[in-house]
Amino acid sequence: MIYLKKFVLGILITCPAIAIANTNNIPNPQTLSGDEADACSAILCLSSTTGRSVSECQNPLKRYFSIKGKKPHETISKRKSFLALCPTGEFSNKDEFLDDLANGSGYCGAAELNISQRESRVIQECKNVRGEQICTPITQWRINNKLPSHCQALFDNGYTDFKNIRYQGTPQWQSQPDFGNRPSGKWVE
Image (cartoon, rainbow, N blue to C red; front, side):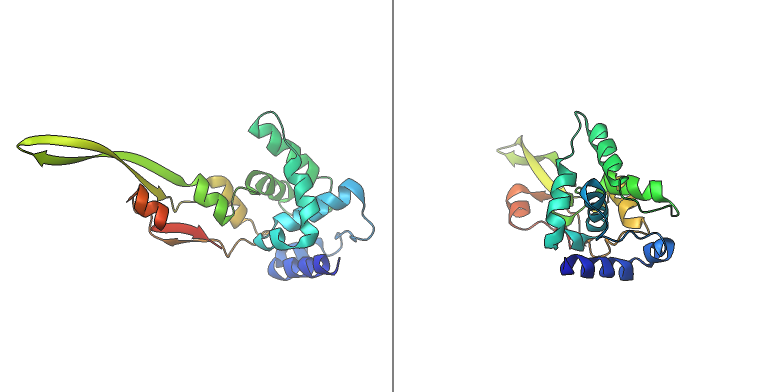
């Protein structure tokens, strides 16, 4: 529990908007239980890349990510409803904040971006062999340096702290062996 208190303090320091907006509405974690406590813990843990490494976040995040619908939009809706169980009180852009968490959480870490932003294309590599043009299809790969809109919204939200995720390198097209050994650009934390 001491780590969670330090984590909450860290979030409040790095996200002053939450501290200012909720000074009178912050629920006491010791008075919450069940779904409310899990929802509040999940909000804190999802609001920063640091939350995934805090041991107190493991159970609330496991619960959050176990919520699934039959279709992707149903999963997002159910997860947002779960987060809304936290009695945070009202603050500016609360619905937008919960939308951003539900749409982007779990999809916007460096590891996830390096998978979701992977692109491929097929080009023709042509050679002149004894006066005849022979072309071979070559697949090239790269990791795009543009954030998906749901990640951009999460990163830009004033109540979250994802400043340490950035793109390193350049999104150059590479052959499979080169890309597999060392992509020219990738997302890092």
